[in-house]
Amino acid sequence: MVTSRKLHPKSLFLVLVLLTLILSSCEPGNDRREAIIPEEETIAVINNKKITLAVFQTKLHGFLQYYSDLIQTDEEQLGEIKNIVMNQLIDEELINQEASRKGIQVSEEELDSIMAESMSSYSEVNLESHFKAAGMSEEEWKSSLRQYLVREKLIREEVIKKIPITKREISSYYQENGNQFVAPQALKVRNITLSTEEEATAIHSQLLRGKDFKELIRHHSISPDKIVDGDLGFITKGELPEEMENVVFGKKFNKFKPRYTEVVRSQDGFHVLKLEQYRRAKKISLNEARPRIKQILIEQKWDQYYTRWMEKLREDATISIDQDMLQKEEGF
Image: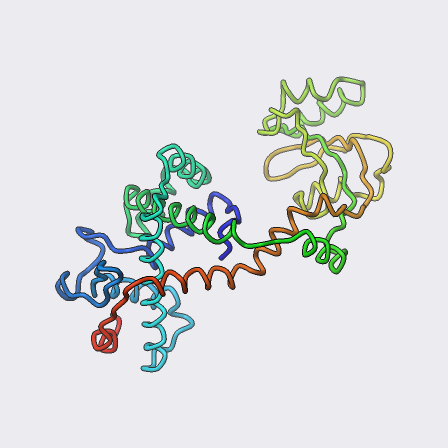
């Protein structure tokens, strides 16, 4: 995973729920987590921080459940899985300790902002159902989110920002992959959305008589894009619903003369679209492509630099694992 990618709010929520179920540490006092053996039994110690068998069991159980369709748990494969889960636990604890040592923190403002963004796609009822399905409370999720963001911030500072990307590398990538940097033909589109076909037909008639489109959008549109006077920007094929795209990119469109479409129906209502400007396909310049290429190169180098960083954390750490306990654990 390359942590610099920005996730869609709904994706962020689901990722964090998954992290809580499989990767995040178990907290004492949670009814959801059954300690099969006493809490004080220790399976590993990382720099004097104990990892209890109960924590390991819960993670192992979550892993086996999540990948149940792919796993046939013979003895050899279960041994490999236990090592994977143990290494995840060790890596996570080392990252948490390093973040604490470096004083990495997430402010309440940052946390509240990310929480609001990640929950924005859910109604209150849907949120409750997702928390219930995940077996977690909102406060538990908030705590996991804070830990996740602290780790992300540390990795961004200690790994991503330190991955060297030279101008020569960017230029070479651009020269060797020029077909990736072509902006397709696009149309600048403005939209008005109405509740009924009758309203949309009436608006269309007013437009043909010369009424100001922006004024009509401000007074009649039911779409959120009314706050920008219906401006959808430059649209390329594949970005609009099929029924709208067929009209916008239809054969009748004169590419150099702005015009209004007929009334178009979609799941959101009835639309009249203004095709304002045509942009030919063009090659993106090196300067324009530079940020994108840099991100691509970072992703290519990510595994190498992240692995090297984790190896250094492990080299500087004192790690002991009770191999007998690990070998005897069967999952549950």
